[in-house]
Image (tube, rainbow, N blue to C red):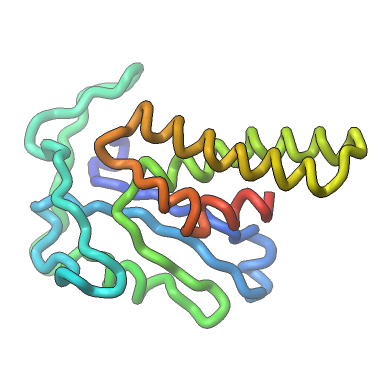
Length: 175
């Protein structure tokens, strides 16, 4: 909103110091480009999946709590199409594996909610309850993340974002 552009999310098993050292890391990038920026959307059936058509109204001014009204702008016409394939080309490296999805809310939630589960797993470890209990807390934590996402973002969140993507289970294990 502050930038005046549509944004996505990035989360995953990618601790910054390890990425900087070019140790193998992976990430999930969520982006669901609005129609005005999707001149050539990702083809149907491609391996990366096709972005959904965003329902964000980029013409009407947006208002966030505590902020001024924002009018989002489209990308300049001479920019390449904003799609999953082009974003992946920009960021994917042999040591930094990128997977693209359209579930912006799910990736954002995975990156935030895993911290709660990581605290619980740390408590279990600190209490000396063992690895079995820690694994159980993490498994139930993933299920709770899915329930939270479905409750508050039912139209867009996919359970697979938490269970199959780096922003879910891999980020939780790393934390």
